[in-house]
Amino acid sequence: MYMKVIKIIVLAIFSVALLSCGGKEEKKKEGFRYDKKSEVSKTVENNLNDIVITGNDAMQFNKKEIKVKAGKKVKITLKHIGKMDKNVMGHNFVLLKQGVNLVAFGNKAASARKSEYVPEGSKDVIAYTKLIGGGETAVIEFDAPEVGTYEFLCSFPGHYGMMKGMFIVE
Image 1 (tube, rainbow, N blue to C red):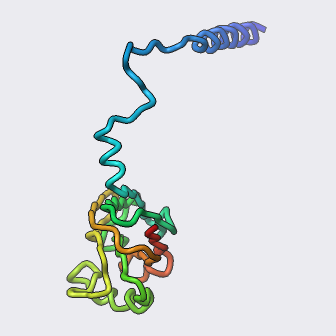
Image 2 (cartoon, rainbow, N blue to C red; image 1 turned 180 degrees about the vertical axis):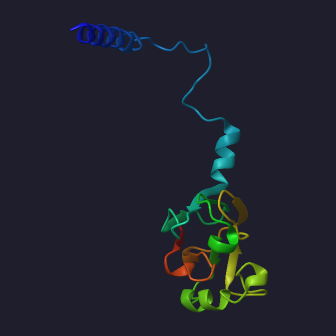
Image 3 (cartoon, rainbow, N blue to C red; image 1 turned 90 degrees about the horizontal axis):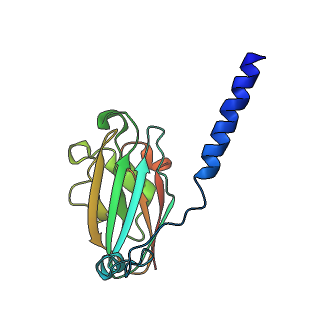
């Protein structure tokens, strides 16, 4: 009986505390608008396609499709959210030119260990990140290619079968 009374009192106190949190309107400074972005951030935003993509220890990208605006800079941030070392479960982001056979490129890249699985001097690649392991991040910036559809992949041996997607320039 005693425990039941304590539970009811605790529940009542919690309910009152919860209800007292709402209903207050935030005061805004005069002449300051919270809903508008500054002109500087608008300019930066309008000139940059900022993409974040993650790879994990289960050989998966979190995106299968990326859309960007033509004629603007593209910033790709690749985050490896797994824990495995890059020698075991390394990931990169490789954007291929139009018409390049993804499977043929992936097979060729598998033997390019010294250059982090991107064949040196390859004419098939638009842009790529370095190879990263668990907990690491890589960032690249490049100009968006012409309007069209391109393929991207992780070129670590065997990963391109699952870690691939479409890069669409509009």
